[in-house]
Amino acid sequence: AGNPNVEGLPEGPNFFDYGDSEQAMAVLREIGFQNAKSTELSEMKWNNVNNGAVLYDVLLNGTSRTREVLLGQTTEEANAIQSLMAEKYNSVTDCGKRPLFMPALVTSGQKPL
Image 1 (cartoon, rainbow, N blue to C red):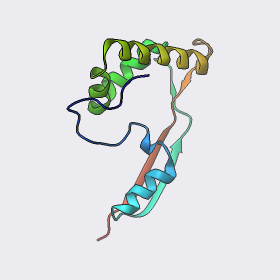
Image 2: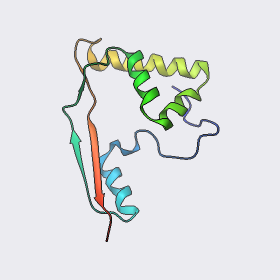
Image 3: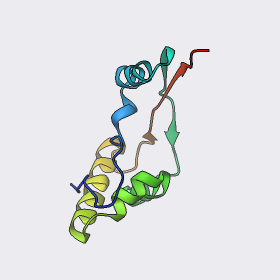
Image 4: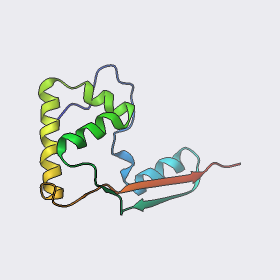
């Protein structure tokens, strides 16, 4: 659902590229950082996200790049994204009966002196 190639948006990484610890650490090492490591914060629960529409708003207002990708969609593409997010939300939360877990990956490295 949706189009990742929004006209006028500068080239940049995919929203989910750095959700993989190995990929995130490899990028840090590639640009010269040392001692790269990742920690997953797996107990994060989003109790205030109670449906797919709210989840869409979180992504719409979460980062400037994600916002521009979402705003750059046609009406049909935006509707498809919103429908998919509602479907996924309902699937992972059993229609809101379980909290939405949103683990975060914190990746860091040390810049050489």
